[in-house]
Image (tube, rainbow, N blue to C red; front, side, top):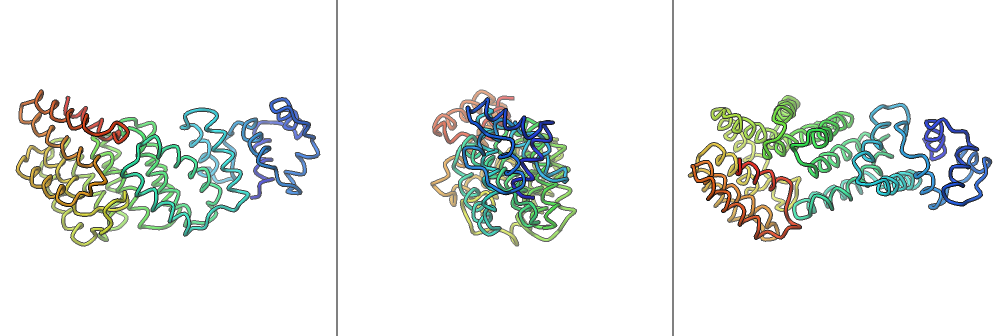
Length: 367
C-alpha cells in the first residue's frame, strides 16, 4: 500500500470527503489546499511535503484503520499513540510513520543493528528516554510489516517498550508483552518467539508482578522449543521467581538448577546488552531468587560472583545486588534495617539511573 492509499484510508475512516480534508487542513494551518490536490496525493501523482505530512497527522487524529485489512497492523499505530505522553508526541509519531512509508524504511539488517544498539542503551539509560525513542521506532517499523523478518524486529522492540512501564501496571506492560508474543508468532521465527516470551517472564517474575502472565509466557516459551537459548533461560528463571514468590520452594530450586544447565550451554559473552545473559547477570537473577527463598548463604555467594564480573559502567545492577541484601535483612526479621540498607543504596545511585524495577524491589522490601 502506498502513501496515497494510506491517506485515503485515514480520510475515509473519519467519514470525510476530499474537500472536507482540504478544508480541515486550511482551517488549522492557514493554507489554501484544494480538493484536487488531495486527490493528487491519493492517486500518488504527488507526494506530500514534510509540512503537509505534519498537517495530515494532526487533522486526521490517528484513527484505527491505518494499515490494510490485517487487524494487528491496523491497531498497531493507535496502540503506540495511545501510550504517548501528549497529542504533540502522537503527532510527531505519525509524521515519522508517514515519512518512513515514503522512504521505504531501513533494511532488515539496519533494523537488527538498531536493536543491538537499544539492547546496550537499555542497560544504562532511563526508562523515559528509552520509551520516547522506541515509540518512534515502533511507528516506523509498523510501515514495513510486509516482511516477516520485520515482525521479529517489531516483537523485540515491543518487548523493550513494555519494560519501560511498571510491571505491576497490567494494562500497559502486560498488554505490550502479549502483543510482542503475537508479533513474534507472525514472524515464524521460533528463536524470536521464545526470546520475547522468556524476556517478559523474567521481567515480570523478577519484579514480582502479574505472576499468572509470567507463568503463561514462560510455559509457552518452554513449549515452543527445548533447545538451550537465552530466551529459554529467561523463561525458566522467570518461572523460578514466580514460584519463589508464591512460596513453592521445590519448583523454584528445580527451575534454578535447570537454568544453570541451560546457562552452561547458552551463556553469552556480551556483557552489556539486554539481549545477553553473561555470568554476572545470571547471578543477579539467582541472587534475588535465593534471597526470596531465605537462602542467605546461596544469595551472598551469587552476589559476590556477580560483583566480580559486573562492568563498572552498569552501577544500576550493583544497586540491584544491594537491594537483594536489604531484602535478606528484612526477611530475617530486621525490616527497619533492611529498608534502611536498601534506601542508602538507592540514594547513592544517581536519580537518572533509577529504574522501575528498582522501585518495585524497594516496595517488596517495605512490605
